[in-house]
Image 1 (tube, rainbow, N blue to C red):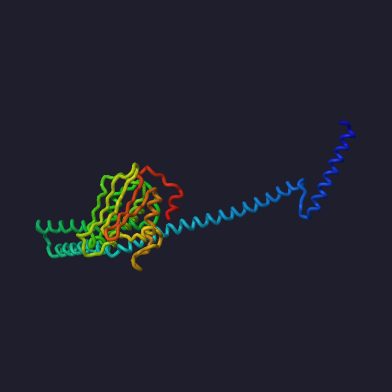
Image 2: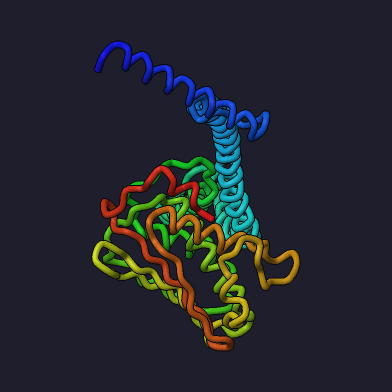
Amino acid sequence: MTLRAKVGRLAAMTRRRGTLRQAFERLGPGYRCPVEQPCADNRLLEETVRERTAALEAANAKLSSSLEQLHATQAQLLFADRLIALGRIAAGVGHEINNPLAFILSNLEYIHQELQQKERLSEQDRQEILEALAETRDGAERIRLIVRDLQTLSRAEDVGSGPAELASVVRTAAKMAMHELRHRARLVVECDGVPPVQGNGSRLGQVFLNLLLNAAQSISPGNAEGNEVRVVARPGEPGQVLVEVRDTGCGIAPEHRERIFDPFFTTKPLGVGTGLGLAVCHGIVTSLGGTLTMESTPGRGSIFRVTLPVAGAFVQSPRSQADWT
């Protein structure tokens, strides 16, 4: 192509572009020529991305703050429920402590009088004093064990998750709940021979104490020999331990079963239940990789089943504790 032809072709293209621009301008003052449109669109897109990014950062900061508040509230609810459970057993624990304490004081008074009245002790007197001292020591040991169990259940800090001796945890909870049970039902505990489970002793103690107290309160007092609360632990599915808490109480109505694990839902009279116990139990068990289910027949009793992973079979994720509700 000659130089003249090239110049002519370029001039024609320029004229056509000018004609197109004029046509687009006639379409309206806000309409942009497609030649200029990509640059304008890119600027608009960049501005939109910056605005959306800033909005997402603000929303993320707000969510982080809400998550921290949720964790704090969760810890407070866990501890509050434990204090509620301890409050429910306070009278019985006071009675449990008062008996050995009265025995200790009586023996100490006897020993004091014997030592004051007799300058020289016969072998028989000496033997009686030694027996009184041994009984006094036993009474003090009983009080020490009660206080230790209370400290285990009331510990506020989260000491993490690790191997927990299930049989020991269940027996401690059973001793704490015994004052509620003794006038209502016979308590049978069968939990020997199961492997350690993944969990936290104080948290699991809170679970089984709540389940035992609920079982006790589902049975009217006065016929302890005719009713039973049975706790049975045995191997479940591979890598799991199954614990059943069975009672012969009043059972749970069908219309309440779907909500039984909802926070603040309770069928108990005002002042007796807060509706936190089973919700907290469900959250603790699921955070440890287990399950908590219920089966009930009105008038015949209920069965609560807890499955827990054998120690080492479950690694707790960072979200587990946050997902307790």
